[in-house]
Image: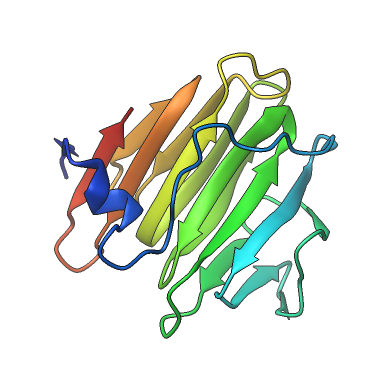
Length: 167
């Protein structure tokens, strides 16, 4: 168990593989109700969500899904692309291929996911209205928290590596 700070943003945003190109002025998300997630964008990447024992894999860009603690989101291993999830308060979570995450917490002031494997980038505006902090943990009890910035997190369950890059 340990946390390693890694200073190269290119590691997380995958310039070599092109899975995510950050925008200097991201578009404003529509209003997202508390306890919902918006599928904001789905670039060349299939994914599925398991919630309350049922698997949903026909979710499309623009769909709202209910935030159920314990829900698992998995992205495809075979495609280069990304999935963008929108949360209340203009928060965005960009999910890379071959990533699995589980919703752990959602309150008026905190949202948390457990990253079981893969890469994510979290954008949380300083002026957010709906979320105070966003926490990403690993099964090994590593964690990273953001409360108004951009953060990349990578977790490899085989080696136990947990890398964080904050901008």
